[in-house]
Length: 325
Ligand SMILES: NC(=O)c1ccc[n+]([C@@H]2O[C@H](COP(=O)([O-])OP(=O)(O)OC[C@H]3O[C@@H](n4cnc5c(N)ncnc54)[C@H](OP(=O)(O)O)[C@@H]3O)[C@@H](O)[C@H]2O)c1
Image 1 (cartoon, protein in one colour):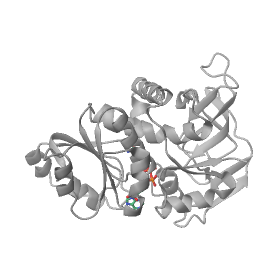
Image 2: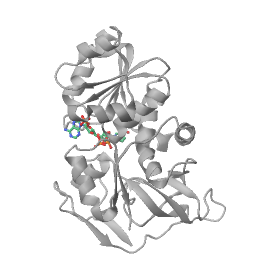
Image 3: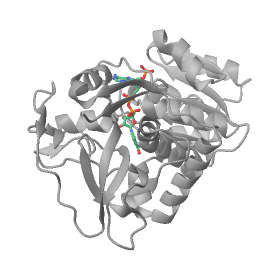
Image 4: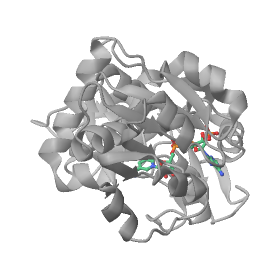
């Protein structure tokens, strides 16, 4: 079968190649899935470089999430051939077939096609875990979402708005502002450059943000510490800026806010009941039409390089979805 293999770690994708590999063995407890669509996440890019916290041994098949149809499962398992499922297991999604533990899969929400389901999974569970589970989002709160053109950022805007929050989206790429506004429908899109606290203060009538959702880090994190309301939460999601910020602990003390570290995948692994509840809550919102994943482009897996390059060059507004040939 065709699979996108990371043969060696490289900074320029030169160690990545689309090639034929034997279909994976299915072990007891695993489900074999025919992958119909698989979406690209920032950690996939980082893993080709060996820069992600999870470092699989090379060679490995890239891709942390997919949607597809069950081909084979243990008798008596929750899944049967023909079921439409979504999920993933850190690697292995960018291939014609994947074998993953049954607990890493969930049924596809009714009404979603394969690309939408593949685009929804990790982005929305990350957004839900951060905003709802860890930051206790409630209706009417002000939420400041950074990196809003990204898969996770757009999901956070969409979810927060669907749950009744007032969303301010930020982007480091002002040319993307119109597309972010059309897709995420926040109250405002502002540039995350230099000092943006005054704009947040103006938009919120001096209240500032109850929740800051930050996949960017670096200077954006530093300025965010000036944008959190008293009693608010600053959720650390990632470091796409390339810099992990330092903070003096007197700042959250004086300003009375909390810094919350998010690891959505690990949260679901450690608390499987909550993980399943998160997936059900997201599916319910999707089935009601309250949330819709934003897809920048759908590509055949043979054009994988175009998708990875666009993410590395920061050209995307929404997700890249690959379809194996
Ligand atoms: N904590 C968790 O559990 C968890 C789970 C999943 C993903 N993540 C993390 O969340 C982050 C976003 O992932 P994603 O899949 O949404 O990625 P993505 O689609 O590529 O989005 C990343 C966004 O970050 C912004 N950005 C700011 N500075 C950047 C830079 N120097 N280079 C590239 N992008 C930059 C860009 O938005 P603008 O151009 O609009 O500024 C970009 O669209 C990553 O750090 C990822 O590792 C964390």
